[in-house]
Image (tube, rainbow, N blue to C red; front, top):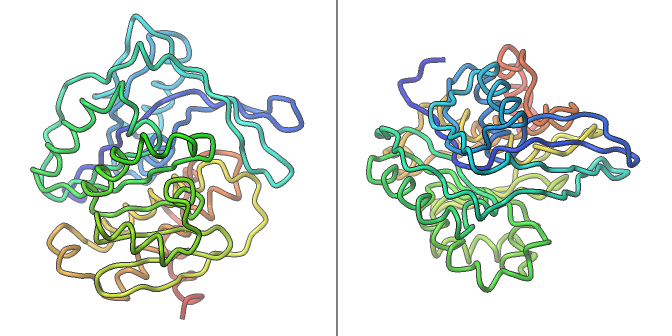
Length: 320
């Protein structure tokens, strides 16, 4: 899908081994940003993943998977001196995942080759990866270069409760990311872990110190959008989830698809979007997340690109 705009994702690439009832039921390439980028690859956007993996068999699996799903490995660095990360995802009775991750941050620094960012390209980043001291100096170079070129930055803190005890020492990096981002999207749980706030209105007020465009997802309650032009709630789609792994990541992918489908660049975003434009973006984000919740994969199905417009229209009718 040629839009004249390039999508870059910066984040970890690992192998997810998924367990149900203490038994492994599958293994697939994973990582928050990777999940979003693979879905956008399946939409034929030809995105790039900026990351690094080991020069090992797990790395081969990840690299091959990306290429087969339309994601360029041009900026996927294969390190000789480290092993590819591994994540164990344990599904509970509600099919929500708890993780145990095995990786050597000390051996990873993020390579320094800089992509040719241009105006209105989209860069998505997030998770603990984006505030980890091992990666952060080089990550900031990427983000600052992209920002200077006029690219749009979409940030998901994805700050889980097992990091909540570190929030004071991580707050400066988190807020620096908020300030760099053109769109901040996180869950209500993320922001409770970061700020200890429960009301989305309070979270949005805090985040507006740094960024203009805030999207807060609240599971079955739907999504809350807050911008300088006002705030609104959008409903979730009722469903029985097969797995929630990748739901938030694909909400992010849907935001990016919505920005591209709506031909929204920096000029349009900074000028202020209409309610109809925001509804289109959230519709796209919601149907991406809904699709993934009904699958055992971390990404939309290969044929989703043929069904997405119909799904978005159906959601917009629900909103009306």
